[in-house]
Image (cartoon, each protein chain N blue to C red):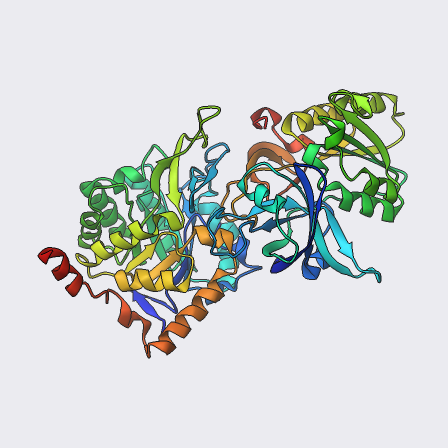
Length: 312
Length: 279
């Protein structure tokens, strides 16, 4: 059975990727997960410099999900290369480095630095974090901004580039198209939904940052719809995510149009989730006599549904 | 190395309307657990259940053993506060829950002739049975200063007495033991202790109490470890939710530091107490 897929020049052995921000730098999980068994590891978002992030409270649980406003605490790209990348390399992880910038130049500079680092397999452009004021999402919420950052990074690296899109726009598929037209090798979606929770007794926001990003099973159907919409306008691979908890959820995203998926929030609940997801995919492929899992990508059959809806 | 066990609840011992002790059949966790470590429990049962979605962290209260001394499981000291702890409050023996552990940096027990003074406030009693057992095994004299709102909230005193721990009980309403805050007898004991007699403090409780104990320890030149509790997403260092502002082990500039893997036990002098919210 073949679960592999291609993103630009990069071959992933399977479609299961640990989502950025939900898996530390990967090394935190090396004791519980064989990192080489994952399709890839998207490490926590990195700026050039170290960042402290927001003060606690940084997360709050909400129905079937959670809000977070970590604020991209991170060790910066240089310390990452020195202190974390060697272990990831030793453990034969496929490393996707999520990068953030407050300016276009910062994205370009980080991409340049990573291109020379041994053991980096792809760059995920974080243009979608809802929790920081400066940079990031300002690129992801404007079509010229998305075009600008993707094409600028394209000029300085041969690594596959994967812009991570925000759902906090009117039409995410137009951003998918802008990314593809600017030279992206794939897109990943969705980042979290900007959201808020308030303690009614104290009347204070439950997060120190006041607002945060909603993730988890609560957002899954919206994310599936957005992947479906993007699949209709781009040809490049899509990495889908949003509350994936089971292998059926993985398959749902793939049938909607994703070539691969990322698992984030549910990895917190079950750090051993990967083996279960993999076994579920194998069993589905056996049951449906599928030899290449990529065959199901975008295979959702909407014809009769659309007809029924239009004629009613 | 932590393991995730679909652990059967073997007993739910109710202590009061708010407190209960839950025992889990979890020999693999018990076998490697050290004092002050914690487990992450999926309070809603199956891993796919969503209410609550995230696991909750609990100090390992007791390491359970069979008659031959072999580790068989762990218990937790649960206080009903939110949705997860309410589920654990009324859970039936025989129910299975995912229990992930052991996790976190443990207490380092000390050796005689030094004395260990444990200071617990309310549900902060949780990590001290395991520490007391380790201290007693080394022959280290141990005292527990244990404070609560009222007599009905003081629990499991007999567990510590059976271990040979000297008890100093304190209630805010004076209904049992010393009247006031736990820091009252602690301050007196620190003042009375000759400088040449080493003593180390181990503290767990509400933030204002830990802050006060840390200050007392510093004033009297005594080492002090605190066990911190923060809202946690994963327990493994992946989510960066549970940070506190703390200096490194060798000092320096404070950084947001993960309670789950760099703690929950910290040298109190590392913590920037002004930055801790007072819950």
